[in-house]
Length: 500
View 1: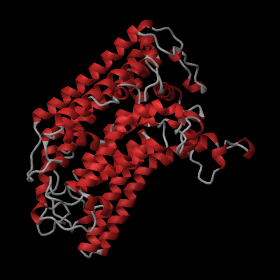
View 2: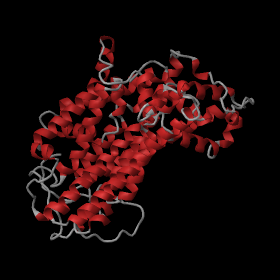
View 3: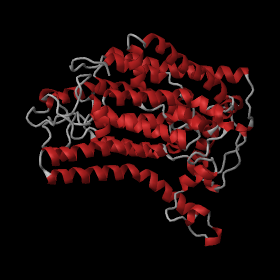
View 4: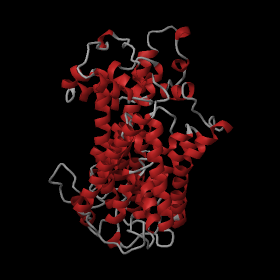
C-alpha cells in the first residue's frame, strides 16, 4: 500500500521458494513444539482416548489389536478440542445434534484419506489413530498451499513482491498457527478462500465460485465469500448501466452474479437441510426439538446459542474479561487496518468505489477482473487462456490486455497501483464484518483464529513494518505477538488447556 508509480512486477521464483520453505519450517516447528510440550506436561483432560462405539452398526469401531499400541495411543491422545468432533464425525457420521456445528468437508477428507492413502496403517495403529493422522496431514499440507496462494494473491493485488513476501511469512507464523497444524478446519478454509480470491482476481470466476462454495462446506463463514462476487457484480452492473448505457448487459451481469452467490450458499443450506431431515423428520410435534418448529429451521444458529452460548452481547460478562484481553491484539490490528484504509481513501470507502472520478485511462482496470469475464464483453478484450492452470505471470499479463478504448476507469488516488483502493475495499469490508461478529456475537477469544485467514491483516501489518518512521518498533511488536501466541498456543492447546 505504499506510494509509488505503477508498474507490473512479476513475482520472483526465489520468493515462492522462500514462502514454501517458511511454510514447511513453521509446520515442522509447530509439530516439534507440540511433541515437546506433550512430553513435558500432563494434559489437563485425559479423556482423549475414550472412544465409545459408534451409534450406527455400519460404522462400528474396530476393536482388533494393533501392532504398535504406543504409537496409536500417542496419536489418539493428541486429538483434542474440536479435533475430537471432526474425527468422530469422520468415523461415525453425524450422531448427535451438537456435532452439526462442525461442517462436513474436513471429516469427508479425513475419511477418504484414511480409507485410501493410509489404509495400510489401520492394522498397525488402528482406525481412530489413522483418522487422526489423516487430519494432521491434510491440514498441514493445505496450510502450505494456502501460504503459496496468499503470496500469489498479494503480488497480484499489491504489485510488490517484497511486501507480498513479508505478508506471506507473517501468515506462516500467524498467532493462530496451532490450529492450522491441528485437526481443525482453518487450513482447508484458508486454502479454499484465498485460492478462490486468487482465481477471482485472475478472471477464473467459475473456479473461484467452486472454491468459495467448498470453503462454505468447510466453515459457516465461507458463505461470506459471496460478498466478493457481490462486490464485483455491483461494479460491473454499475459500469455497464451507468457508464456504458448497456442495460441488458447489466441485467446479465446481475443474474450471473446472483447465480454465483447462490452456488456459494448451497453447501451451507444443504447441510442445514441434511440436519433437519436427520433430526426433525418423522417426529410428532411434541417430540420435535425447538428449532425444528421455527419458521426458518436453522440448526446451526440453534447449536451456537444452545450449546456454545453464542449470541449478541451474551459474552459481555466480567468473568470473560481475560478472553477479551486474549483477543485484543488481533481485533486491534483489524480495527487499525480498517481505520487506516478509511483515512487514506474515504471517498472510495463511503461510496463503495461507485461513481468516483476516473483514473488515467492507461492506468485503468476493472474491479476484480484482472482476467476476462464472458458476461461483460464490453468491458475489455482478452486473449484466450491456453492452460487450465492459472500461473502468476499469466495473470499479471492479463492486466495489460485490456484495450484502452474499452477499459472502465476507476477512482484512485495517486498512492499505490491505480486500482488498489477499490480492489482492496471488499477485503476491508469482509474483515470489518468478521471482526464485528467475533466481538459482538461469538466467543471473543475465537477471533484470533476466526480472523487469521484475512489477507488484509497481513498486508496492513507488512505496510506498518516497512514504514520508515514506525516500522522497526511495530515490527518488533508484531513479531513478538505472533511468536508468543505460537508458543502459548502450542503449550496450552496441545495439553487440553483453554486457548482461543
